[in-house]
Image: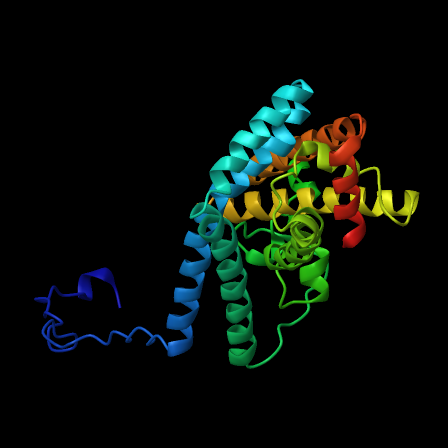
Length: 295
């Protein structure tokens, strides 16, 4: 057949084959189960209570870490500490801004974990140690130290070993234990002796870092527990805030690591300064010793 043998024909519309008025199939969105609804509620409770607790955390960190860490005089440090303490230990502020927000935040996290474990059908497949490209995954946390050098995101050890844990949730459990130890030393000890903690100042922290029934070993335990509390709290707070603000980019993770490193450095300087302050003598010195030895 040649080109001359071809004839022109009138094109027929394809309406009958693909009619425009025929309804197209659109898959229905999956219905939310009660587990999804409950999880969403618990996540919102955690989120907004974390913002509430942040008020106390900011004041406490400023007066115990930042001010002493930048080299302010001892008397000025004490003044700032007492000013901040008067705010968050006011009659209505301490039960709500400190204890209620913290306890309910932890409780919501535990309830969320139990709910997810109950709803989980099969364990997650354990991944090998690989570089991850998705920057918003929960199991990479801030992506590992290699993130700072542009080496990509890596799943952290805790998530690789225990797939149901994320770095943020694991740091929350560690922080809870460290806070419990801190409350026992800084709050329960004084309350058990005097009925309140009104005598506790930064000078008490100096005794805390220098006196313990176990001698030098006890001093290292106190120093180590305080350092652990500060570092984990910085990680948990900064990482959580960046997650709530949906800041998952490489630049955001580098900024987060920078903030954590800066605050950790200040905390080391602050603890070193406090440890070398003169110990209180007389009545205060005796009371501080009782606080430390009773718990």
